[in-house]
Length: 86
Image 1 (cartoon, rainbow, N blue to C red):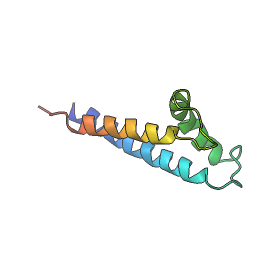
Image 2 (cartoon, rainbow, N blue to C red):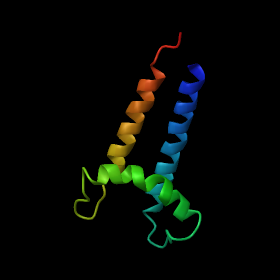
Image 3 (cartoon, rainbow, N blue to C red):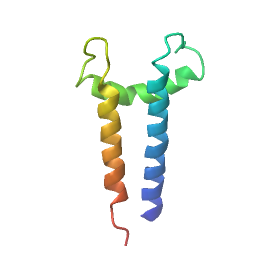
Image 4 (cartoon, rainbow, N blue to C red):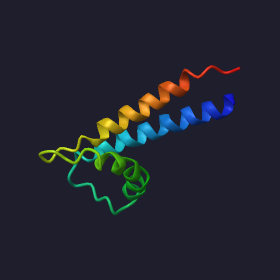
């Protein structure tokens, strides 16, 4: 059980880092998302972000869905970290 939890926590940490990189790259308009490695990053992160984009559409050209996505993953990470291991 401990190995599963530590693997899940590591996966969430890596995914949070990938999301952070994805959000930072959106600030640069000259990034070509159809080229590698940006296409791979987009394919990995966009399905998760699209879940939240369906809940909160972009308002005034600003996409607030990554904030909700970060919040949900961080909440899951903290919940998993607090699970007692016997």
